[in-house]
Length: 147
Length: 223
Ligand SMILES: [Cu+2]
View 1 (tube, helix red, strand yellow):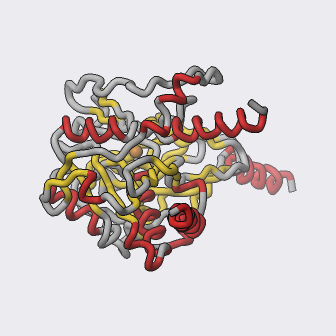
View 2 (cartoon, rainbow over the protein chains, first blue to last red):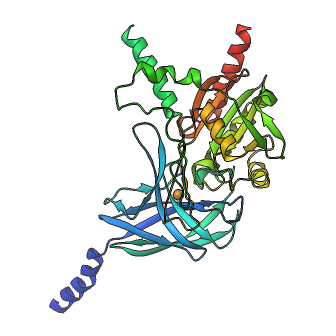
View 3 (cartoon, rainbow over the protein chains, first blue to last red):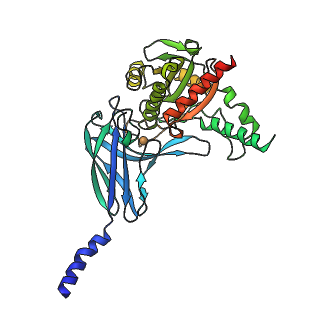
């Protein structure tokens, strides 16, 4: 019996100590012209406080976390964030006009109807890879598809 | 001046200030360009001075090149309403989102769409050449007109529309460029004067189309 409890604890402890991040609703907009940066969007939610520390994909040289920040004068700027906090239980949304994952140095145009893998690196939860569908150039939200 | 009037007045002024678009163009060795000619207000201290260089001063005046390579000025579009958006083709987020939204609005205008000319003016003319603009605008709407020109011509157009943008260095950008801005669409009257400013996230395309139609209707009733 004691062995069982110890064994159960041994199994449970690492699980409890390990944050889990669920990444949903990934999408990217199709490229119009070659050699232009692309933007990908996801929703990420962690069961405990975690932090997005980077992202990568085999189809781009670099993926950067970008946020649009608007100052008191209404002037919007695309700001590079090194990390992004994920408070426990709070869904963090990447969406046009807010935050995006900027795909720099794309090896090819993003073609509507295709998909590509995107790996998000979290401080506690580690790596999460999602398959990102490429929607039409006019897409602005996942649910609207390529309207 | 009643409080209500003052509030409305301030709101209108703010609306215009929100209409300021900034493009951050990070060019190699680039210096700050086009410093503010529209002075940003101090947080709450919006002065009358700001109001006088506000919306009444925003006007559609430009000498540019359209995406077919034709030299154009505002005179080529007079008599029609204009829906104007400043951006650049390297912009990954707000520009495609706003242009797709503008295209939806145009479709929703129905037969009245003929009376509205959609203009996309680049603030990055060095890279957004005529053929680049042609390919880019075609992806959004058959009626979308892309405008480019020399740096000086674009700067002049931006100045007349009270669009503010800047260029900066950034060693982070792989090709020496990285840009951003907030997307505002200006509705300009057939005489080239400012009518209203819209942002994609503020209302559905249906609602904006309805508002544009209402403005067109109203101006007809006055005549
Ligand atoms: Cu970006």
